[in-house]
Image (tube, rainbow, N blue to C red; front, side, top):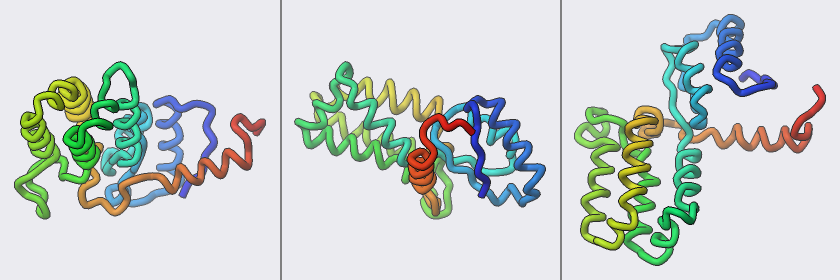
Length: 186
C-alpha cells in the first residue's frame, strides 16, 4: 500500500505520482485491479500509466451518484419512487445493474449483460405508463446516455469482483481527516 498527500487532484498530478510508484514498485501490474471513484482525471491517469491493469469503479459511488441524482427536486424521480412501488422496484433494479457482466460472454453468465438488464427494466416499466413517463428522462437521458454511453459498463460493472467498493479507503480517509484536519500545514 502507498500513502501520499497531494496538493491537487489533477490528471497530471496523478500521472506523475503513478510514474513514481511504478518506478519504486516493480510489480506485475497485469494482475492488479484499481478500484476508484468516478473521478475522470484519476481514471485517465490509471489507464495511461498502468495500461496492463484493470480499472473498475466503486459500486457504492455509483449508487451514491444515482441516489443524489434522484434527490434533485427538478426531475421528480424521488417523489415518484416514494409513492409508487413499481417506480421503487425500477430504482432498485437500476442500482443493481452493476452486478451484471459488462458484456455478454462471461463464463458465469454468457447470454446476459448489463445492457440486457437495462432493456429488461425498460420492458418492465412499459407496463406502468405513469412510471414510464415519470422515469423516462432518468432512465434514457441519465442511465442510458450517461452511464452506458459515456462512463461505459466495463468501468462500473462489479460482476464477479472480490472488491466492489473502496469504502475501506474512505473510512481511512475519514479517520485521517479527523486526526490531521482538513488543510494541515504539512
